[in-house]
Image (cartoon, rainbow, N blue to C red; front, side, top):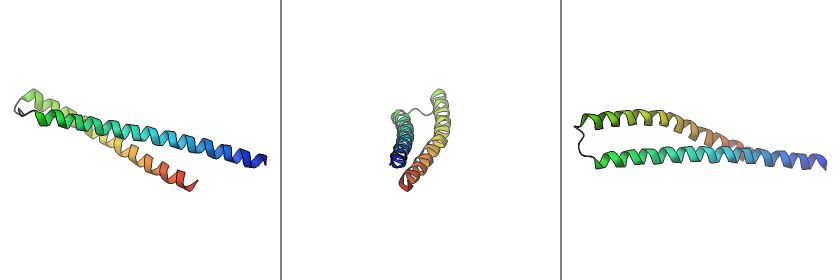
Length: 89
C-alpha cells in the first residue's frame, strides 16, 4: 500500500512539472506571436518605406524576429515532446 501511494505521488509531481513546462512554452509562443503581429501592424500602416530610419528599424526588428523564431521553434518542439512524454506516463 505504501508503494502505491508513493508511486501516485511521484506521478502527480511529474505531471505537475510537465504541465508547468507546457504552460511556460505556450506563454513564450504566444508572446512571440503577439510581438510579430504588433510589428507587422505598425509597419503595414506606414507607407513611407523610403525613409531610411524607418527602413533600418524594420531591418533591425526583422533580425530580432528571426532570433525569436529560433526560440519559438525550440519552445514548440519542447511543447510537443512534453505532450508526448505526458501521454506515455
